[in-house]
Length: 114
Ligand SMILES: [Zn+2]
Image (cartoon, rainbow, N blue to C red; front, side, top):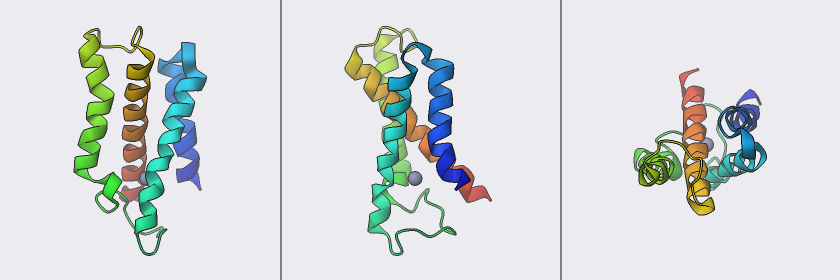
């Protein structure tokens, strides 16, 4: 239960801390990346509290995570300023989707440690 709550709380806190002007939109975009857990539907059983998602579910593997890093970083690299201020809306959304997915992977990975 704490794990699921963190999937909502952490994106909102990051949005408030780093995307304050558009925190609601940024938070919603990052929370929406929870949809990545649709890959659990491919597993049997769908939910296993003892299973580590990272490296098991297809959208939680290293190649997928590399794509998420690219989604996060490429809009910033193209912008060359290192922050998301002034990015076109589509690039900003892609950046936030990448960030949301990376936070999701981090939170899932933390769950693997306990
Ligand atoms: Zn997950």
